[in-house]
Structure formats: C-alpha cells, structure tokens
Length: 298
Image (cartoon, rainbow, N blue to C red; front, side, top):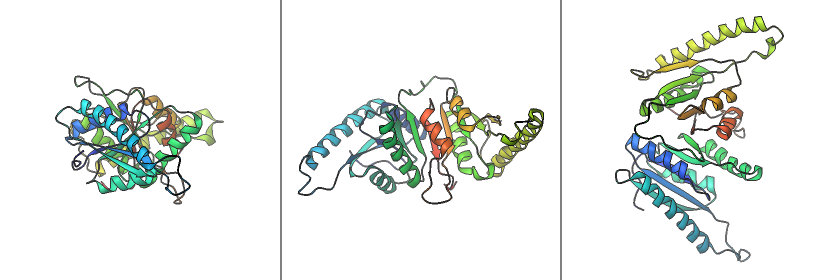
C-alpha cells in the first residue's frame, strides 16, 4: 500500500469497524496537509506442534481482508488529495503498534475508536488504551462510535482542555492551542477545584473557593504567556468551576469538537498512565478525546 507520508495521522484498527476513527483521521489530515496511515494488528499466538487449530496463514488472510476494507473506506473519505497507506502486523497488539509508530517519521497522533462494550470486553479494550498510553509519546485520540466529522461549512467549534496544575500542564496547553487554531475554534481551559474540608461552613468555602478560582485562572493565563504560544485571533476562556473534573469535562464534551486531557504521571513505573479523570472522560465523552503525554517536549 505504498510508503506512508512524513508525519502521518495513524489509525490503530481493531476487530470491529472504525468508521468514526477513520473520519476523524481524515478530517485531521486534511487540516494538517498530511497522510493517513492504517495499522492493523492480527493477534498471533506462537506456533508449534500443539497449535494446530488455526493456521497462521488463515489469520493473516483475515487480517488482510479487514485492513483492505478499512483502507477502501478511508480512501473513499479522503478523496484524491490525502494519501492513505496501510500495514498489517502480526503479534501482540500493544507491542506491535508501539514499534510500528516508532518506525514512522514522527507520527502526529494515534487514533483509535472507543466502543460501548460489555464489562469483560471493556477491560480488554482498556488494557490496549492503557498500554498505548504508557508507551507512546505522541498524542493518543479516542473517538467514540457514532462521531461524525463536522461539514466544511460548519460554524467554528469549541476545543476544551482539562488543566490540572498549570506549571505541569505545558503539553496540554500547547496541544489545546494548536488544536483550536487548526480548527478555527474557540478554546476553553477548565480547571476544576473543590474544598472538601470546608463543606461544614458553606460561606467560608465560598470565600476561599472564589479566591482560589481567581488565583488559578490567573496562573493558567500567565502560563500561556510564558510558553510563548501564538494566541493572536484565538478566543480563549479560562473556567475554574467548583465541580469534579471528570464530571465537568464529560459535560463539556456535549458541546465540544475535541477534549484535550493529560495522561496521569504516576510516581512508579507500574502506576496507571491514564488516571481516574482521563479514564472517566475516555469512557463517557461524546466527542473525540486527545490524551497528551505530560512530558512531551514542545
């Protein structure tokens, strides 16, 4: 299927249709002037005398057929101006995807499709997302099933980003500004807060909360300036609501074209690289979610 273009948008295909993920990738590639590269991993077990029920050639043939179907669908979406390439891989899903992305020339992002699954299948899907989040340094985008790319003549949309600690959110701020500018969209930066120790005194909680909200909003604005980001002509609003972060971001997904959140930065290598807030957003959001590595350089 020819060689991928430099800096492609990568789509990680699974066993199920990925029309929403393909639509997002094509829409992104059109904005960025790059190609789309499809990766489909066929989970292949080690072969030996005891493994006689399924021949590897049959598994590979099924994988090639699935890849071809996705390729044809993507070509139909992309038209003649966006290059589409693909590659079939055999092995364990996360390992093969990570190695294949590393072989590319600076992939822009990896896109996969989120589906409503049974609890057991959701655990398997979540392990794939978590595995990729732990090992990929490029943005990982989860697109919900049923998402549809906006028409070309649609009004400017909204990009929402969840900002945790401002001075540790540089990668999120950079990605959010870049995404909003590419879409000609408004940008809303959300930093949720709570004061659980002051619930017994609502008036004291309100006074302290309002002070914290003003201070943290100012820190976010200052950080945008310190990073030297191009904000000319970009409408940016900073919100500091008193509400659980995941709840506020999921609510924001109803009106957003993209949510940007940071991966969890665990204290130990075995910790979750998604985190509870990002995990809830990935599971419940109604729009695509971009998961950003907090240590990704600008």
